[in-house]
Length: 289
Length: 202
Image 1 (tube, each protein chain N blue to C red):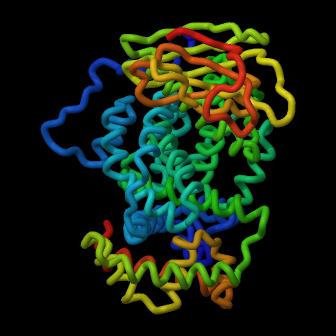
Image 2 (cartoon, each protein chain N blue to C red):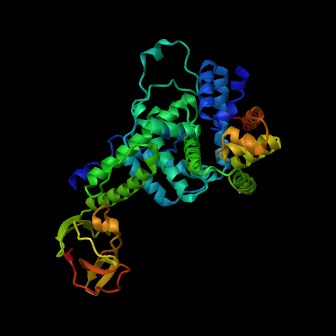
Image 3 (cartoon, chains in turn green, orange):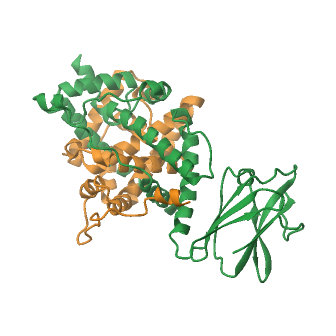
């Protein structure tokens, strides 16, 4: 019987066990230091397989996003020293951590089910996964709330994690941009009323070449029409793109990057949804920078 | 705006500046990351990101999904560095484990809705076999691993590759190789033990 479990150390090390069996094997490892040591050494060996997959440098934006994400993410407190751990004489098996009760597990029955389906995560990792899901969602919530522009209900359910992550990525990018602007010595903010109703909020830094534009209460436009943004200099108005539906409704900010030297005004006109080369209507917003 | 500024964490904790005098090992870096050292985290990222990304891409394949997983992995490393226990394995091993789990999670989550076609799996596996042969140009370590893989029986190698690079469960591996589950387990374990001993893993 232990042979059957012992023979699973390899599959355990490669994350190839299904949920139920993994739990069995981990319970077995806790009781058997020798098997646990083998499992640990095989997991270490798997690291060499990882290297053999061939290193590939991720794109620079990945690092930027990750560095921004960790600035928004609190680290977990260390594993608490439980009294019963001190009392128990034998050290826990090296590869397996004593399972702690996972708080709020009930609330996440669905997440749990999905994690169970994934059948690769150890109890410890499963808990970590749940926790990181919650923290990711919490981070997204903080960003959404603090941005004051993005709104939306953040769900912590595992099956909505993807959506949360998209929001987080957006919110992170927004937050990064605002951060860049706010830390610039020439940071400026201004509100510009629209002549057709609603307001445009601008935060920008010429030095950083970065502008964040958020709209609120702009009137909805008929089918086929859209709001077009213009950067105005002595040379005239240069198109700076259409506001997407989300940007026009204020659900998402618009982020503009690039040199801003010489730009004196920012304008918005109503144009055909495909955009125009030059403004064809009077601006509803014209704001001096 | 002011309120959101406060959440951005642009300020560094005092006294966490990294000593640049000598290159730190991944274990040292992870220990400093556990203390909230963002510079150490950056160094750790620089040191391990291409290893991690290579592994993720091998399992996940889709570039966009792989980038997503990469971010999940490093955010998890940041969060959980405080709970990393060096007695349970090297920092590199821990990071690879996190990466592999996340990659496999992603693959299995994606597949659960569409049910992975095993024929497609075999095709991908054959392609990945070719890839493995092609990457000998990499570091000596890679070369050593590939050489060690060559000493395995074909069956052991197949089982390990399908499980690790394919992200399949051992049951799926058994289906793909058309052998009983117990046989797959034994092959994986025997193969991994040979690899361990060949590679001199402590």
